Length: 259
Image (cartoon, rainbow, N blue to C red):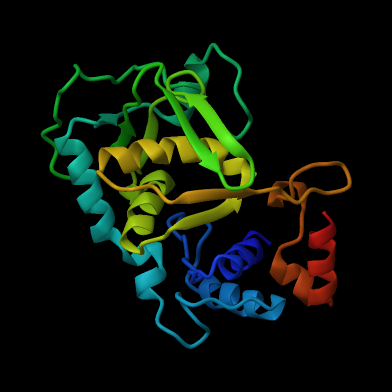
């Protein structure tokens, strides 16, 4: 449904809609899902100006095929001493946390693996370590969301040092989308309101890489009868499951318009 809102935003602003396959999670993103995504979006009535089609090439718009772009960004951040290797697991950070945090958010990193300020790692490859971006302590960050207005967060309070490259040698979402948005000249990102905090993290990466950040539009989330965000852990239906159950695309669009 978020992609439908992106289509509407592109149409309203005379823009071009880009579909990108974000498949860096190897455990959840099998290759055969790519065609399924395209087929389901077409079934729902969506079209786009750039990106993979049912019979088209995927590589330019598939994150798992764009490693070299992410490596260049990693090297630039490393050389600027803005990232550092970290041996802490998510469990380690959770166990050391003293402040409350949202169930989907890692608590503020306690600084266990902090290097001395200005230290540049001599590692030539990101493989084998988690790499964290060191956020500026207590800096107030802000951006103007195209739906919600001015948004504020304090680095080191609302969020802490975050992972930009995982120890299994996969770039993290925060780094990959920044590198891709810049390379693809994205002018506006449309996504769910649950990713508001990620926008502040990414704003720091844009700044560190000398890139201009796009505009952001965080759309409201679709919820179930209990007010919970639709998610797999709550047994919500995917577009494919709705399609196979005989759902009508126009009825789904009408439901979303009224939500």
